[in-house]
Structures are given as C-alpha cells and as structure tokens.
Amino acid sequence: MAISIVVSFLGWYFVYIILSAFARDFMARPAFGNINVALLLGILQFVSTFYLAWRYTRYARRRLDPLSQQLRDEAEQHRAEMENIERIMAERRRIETWAAPPRPARHRRSPGGLR
Image 1 (spheres, rainbow, N blue to C red):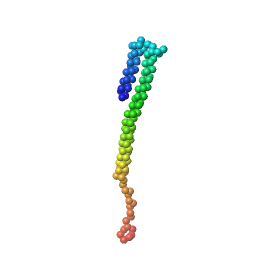
Image 2: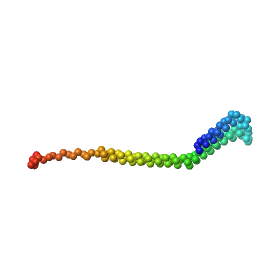
Image 3: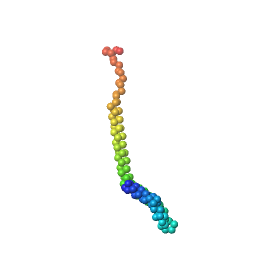
Image 4: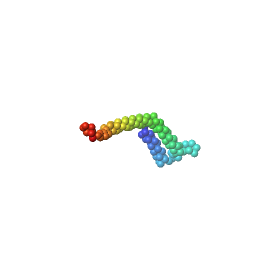
C-alpha cells in the first residue's frame, strides 16, 4: 500500500515537473478566466498530496495500528514473564546462599558440677 502511494505521488509530481519544463505551451493554456493549466495542476498537486496522506493514514489506522498494538502487547507480556523469572531466580539464589546464623558457644560444665 505505501509503495503504491509513493509511486503514484512521485509519478504525478514528476509528470507536473516534466510538463512544466517541456510543455510550456500546454501549461500556459488558459483553463478558464485568468487561470491556466499550470495553476490548476499545481493546485491539484496540493489536493492529491493531502488526499494521499489521508488515504495512507486511514490504511495505517485500520491495518498497521492493530499489528503494532499486538506487538506491544506481546513485548509487554514477554517482559513481565522475564521479570517473573528473574524474581524467582533471585529468590532461589537467596535461599541457596542463606546460611544459618552461628550458634552462640555454650559453656560446658565440668563433670561433677564444678567449673
């Protein structure tokens, strides 16, 4: 779609340029009143540019925006899964490296109850 819009716009633009350069008599021909063919085609350049921009925007909104939203959703889901895995792994490392606190030394009594 985008390629066809670009090709049609550039084709129309270069036709206008070529006519302006090589068909001066045709472009100078009055269309009505003081308005000649060159002015009409120049105004049509603006109209066609806005039309093609509108058409591509409509196409993008219908076709491309849902695809990009799907990609964003999948990326967010993947990120959430990775964060969950990382959280689980961090907890596992914490448990594996945990060591019981050292026990305080207990005094032994000598046999017979005397110290």
